[in-house]
Picture 1 (cartoon, rainbow, N blue to C red):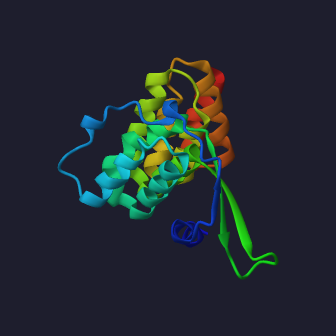
Picture 2: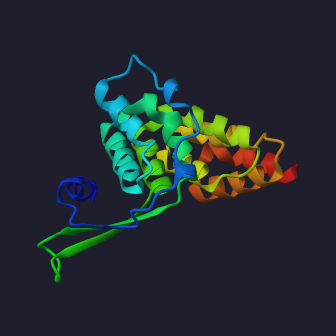
Length: 193
């Protein structure tokens, strides 16, 4: 599935939703991009500031494909949670009946996937993002859940101690769905509280 997305970069025939959305770009100033990171990571971070949604989405995908190497991009990827602009791409694909694969993407979903691929390094910044917002963020919580490591579960358990009822209740629900034994006692405590 990810290889198909990578191939699309080279085989884009038609792009719809080519719109410009200035507000979707990261709020972090461009001059905050670290200078001591690899050139390929920096190049993709810079593309997150593009007014063209397709360029932003492809940059996010590329960062995700880099895995942990792209960890300097984490704060910039989290900022892309605010980018809901839809990008539709058509690409030739011989293995389907009409020969054209149509893929609809949104930057925030691709950013969540990229953070998942980066892994545990994404967890602490995601928790900081949630705590800063002081409100439940479905994308951030689902990203942590998707990472699914012991570090991720511990981070979710720690969110049960937040003062914000909505965060606490929704995280409790997510943890109950995951059925992690480590979460049982904290969940019981939360339910009693």
